[in-house]
Structures are given as C-alpha cells and as structure tokens.
Amino acid sequence: MSPILQQIEQSIRALSVEEQLWLLERIAHELRQKTQFAALPIAGFDMETQLAEMANDPAIQAELAAIKQEFAFTEMDPKRFPSQPAGQLSEAKMQEVEGTVRYCLGL
Image 1 (cartoon, rainbow, N blue to C red):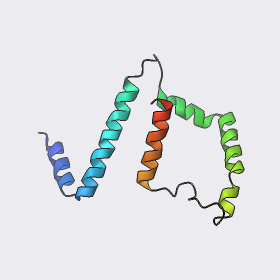
Image 2 (cartoon, rainbow, N blue to C red):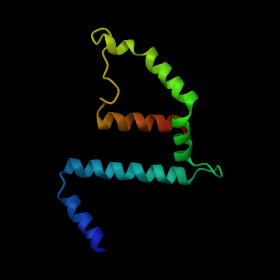
Image 3 (cartoon, one colour):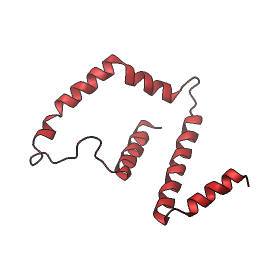
C-alpha cells in the first residue's frame, strides 16, 4: 500500500462512525456517477459540458427567472406557505433530491 493510501486510511479511522458512513456513501455515489457517465452510449456526449451550456443559455436563464418569480409568493407568507428557502435543505435531503433528479433523467 502506498504511503498516501496509508495516510488516508489513518485519517478515515480518526473519523466517527457516522462520518465514516457518510464518506463511504459519498464515495459510492461519486463512483456510481462516474461509471454511469462513462457508460453513456452516445458518442461525443459530455454531460458536464451540456449542463454548463444550459446554465449559460439566456433562454434557460429567463425561464428559471420566470419560475422563481412565479413561486416567489411562497416565501412571502411562511404561515400560509411553510417551506424552507432554497439552499436551506439539509445535506441528506439535497442528496436525496439529487438522486431522484438523476434517476428521473436516466443519469
């Protein structure tokens, strides 16, 4: 085993069991993601490039702005429309949402 791997192993052992489980799940998620993208049968398809292009597309930005404006009222009256503002979800919930979106998109 290389010295770097030994150092990583020692660092992992210093983590709590919960942290080790989180790290293991995160690594497994990343590996699944890499192997899914690597197995795409579409020649020349680069998901990261596609997402970057979509994020910079003015039409998509306009649509996202319209959606944000359409749902802005839900943040105005927290008693009537209880929800967490964007970015306030827990890491676990964000991972669950990400997994669901990827599943729905077939990624």
